Length: 368
Image (tube, rainbow, N blue to C red; front, side, top):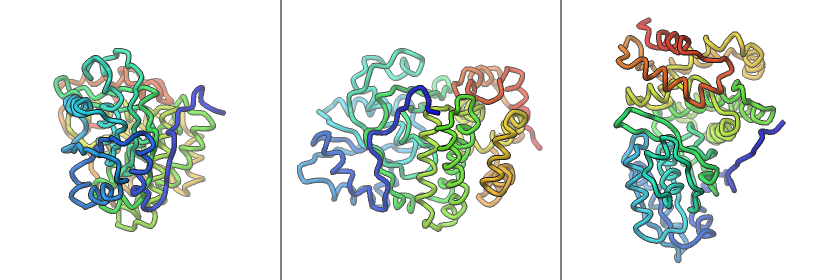
């Protein structure tokens, strides 16, 4: 029934306006903290509201992430900032990039080696700095995992680092934080959540526990993403919680070849992760179809539609197109190698060979 190990956030709050309690939650860990956020949090006034609600005796320094998926240099800069003055906790309020940045920097604050060494496989020491997370998008599920995905632009490597102690101590799911999320971001992050729920359901490491979460996540995402994309926030809690549940599921079951491909392709073409996943999903579904017939039948019964129909409709209504169609691949062999060693690819329900990756790339990059 259960995975061999269960690793969950220490405490999760889910309610409209819950972000106002961030200071009170953080205060339990100490009076000195760093709040990591994106530029939009300040621009929309949400940062000011969060800071105004902090207890009077709590001292908070802010660190802004200027955007894009987190690079190794971004993590190094934040590590230096966390070391500059005593810090009792770190909070991340933002999308997946902000969360992964804060997770990696807080987790590695006291580690002796550069971040690159840990991305390349050096053993990560246990983290000591508590992390509090509040997602402002619904898609990555990073708030529910002990994983941070980082990019090294020097070698176009996008890969994760992970340690059990990276798991957030507190997660705040406030659907009101989605109100300032642009439709294009809702679409891209929502596609990421959908693919993660699907791949965690069909993963070879799925258990009855993770499958139940994945199925619930899929139903919630399918029944809420179009509405939230269209500006109806009455279903924002379903979308946000569906993303969270998919994160819990994938943390225990892993994913599949879509993510195995999306990381190297996203790193090279600088494509938003959710868009890369959406571009890779149809080819991966065609490849996996022979071994996931029962799962597809289950989803057809639960959703009332075929997964392909849902996906195709969304691509059209949310104006998503593949950035890879008709593009020439310069370093195909390197992409194949990175895809094959990915832990996501290794969890794919159908075994993936080098020839299979070449065929998938042909499908994804076809001009048709």
